[in-house]
Length: 250
Image 1 (cartoon, rainbow, N blue to C red):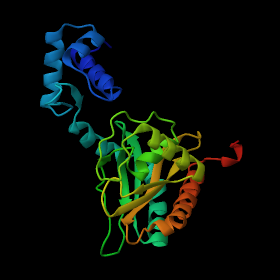
Image 2: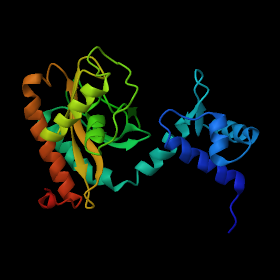
Image 3: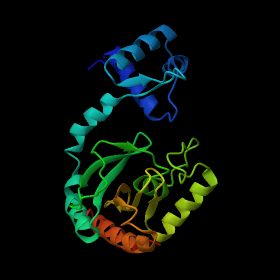
Image 4: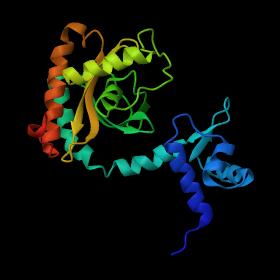
């Protein structure tokens, strides 16, 4: 069956932007699609009108838009990982007393696809569908470290503890790989510490990250290794339920 050319070009634009960390300008899109600039502009404006892309006011470059996250929410309900991980999230809450989260890699960020809240009066929550940076969150560092992704070039500070240079982040990611879990030490939000570990499937591929977030007064530096062990053990058990066999490692 013949394609609808304008629709096909619009979908190609979304694919191009998905692979472009800093977005693309109209001229670049036109060049990549081998179409004239006016056609590229019309396609981009149409996609923007429906929320599939958005234009940065400063750079005039186009990025993927919020409508894709909305559509993704419907897809998340069908992701098997959430079904398998739900008991693990409850187990994390039971054993640590903190909120538990599950995230996957999306748009070069950590996409929260599920969480189980703590019963504590003071707790740290993240809405399902939230996108967070990879370089300053525990879940994000797991997705960076265990996928061997390149460290981001631009690292905006969120607190005075946020790592903003590549060399330090690379060292952190190596430490994360060695101990098997990642830490966010008030790097994304003041007063909040997080611990996360990787989740693998039967193909031995990283499919997500699971972890906890809590007030720094409870998730103290003295207890980080204790929390890390709990999170790592539960993540390993979840990976095993997904068919991952660590006996082939090494």
